[in-house]
Figure 1 (cartoon, rainbow, N blue to C red):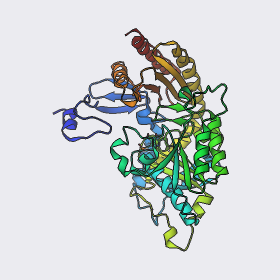
Figure 2 (figure 1 turned 30 degrees about the vertical axis):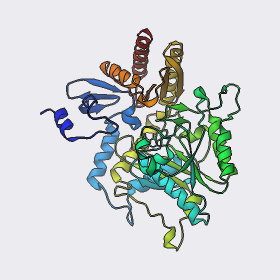
Figure 3 (figure 1 turned 180 degrees about the vertical axis):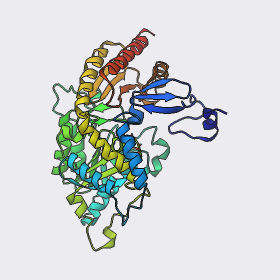
Figure 4 (figure 1 turned 30 degrees about the horizontal axis):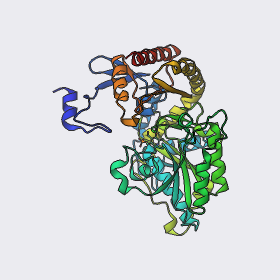
Length: 437
Ligand code: PLP
């Protein structure tokens, strides 16, 4: 039996309709931006393996950090115990995060980072004697994870439909999806009027809002929607005016993806709580962190046991993940990673913008190391153009996995200029083919 046969006999893959999906591709090795398959193919990882990889696969420095840590300590309970990698990573995160986020709470993945943030915000108000602040506000097109709490604050979609009775109520405000402006306005002349919907919710729900949760600057899974920075500063201002917490879900945008270390820097704004994962461990291991201000942290300091934050996961602050996270931050400094992303952004802009002239292309958006082409086909996430293009790019040795009709390219930052140009060329060829079909 081949590995694929054994897989098909035993495994259940995420988001996969098992009877109709093509068989999974067995990968035996990764190096830099490439994945190598059992049958000898080389595939360029154009989506950074679900947005987690930043410095390339199997980076020697990260491998070394991981091996060194494994020889010392693989894991230990994080209630009542601590270890050097967790402490040093927390110290380094506080240095690079927007100023004022001084407390780091570790967990395992993006969904738990957000789940922790929601519970923290909810209990913060309870501990502060304002238990009526129970409502969360999120945005249209939001995606914050697949656990019950994170699904609740995500947009209603095929991801959440089957579970709708399980989800708690949230209020949803307009997202600044400029290409499909909720108010029918033009970005060149508007005054970020779409903030009005958030403002109205905060006014109507006065004293009842626990927090506003957003994916700053780039709403990813909901359609790769790039924001005007003024929307971000506007959200912060409204949260201040209405005295509620701003939760920035930087699970996907963190660690350089939008061209800044954290997307909140585009404002710049300082959230009250920030959620990190994916690039935190450079895509090596499941690791997450929820960062909070002193004000949030202090609401949990009390002799009253009921004010404790009763939340924790078995693998909280896993030393292996923390050690890789530390080495990853070193790489940012040593390899000039943010400068690299700036070069990538320029190339994406120059290479993808002209694709607006294709009939099949509705919009082109670029931010940091992410190049996005929204296609005219519009059946949403289940549109069959996505799987069709996925197969076509795979045949060309390129892993791109469109979100419905939204094609995007988000490589590890170690991609060279030549490789980026080659991908842009391939995208152009495939889209030209769509135009001609
Ligand atoms: N938040 C955002 C913005 C994400 O993009 C994702 C995943 O893509 C998550 C949360 C959930 O992360 P995870 O899949 O690690 O649970």
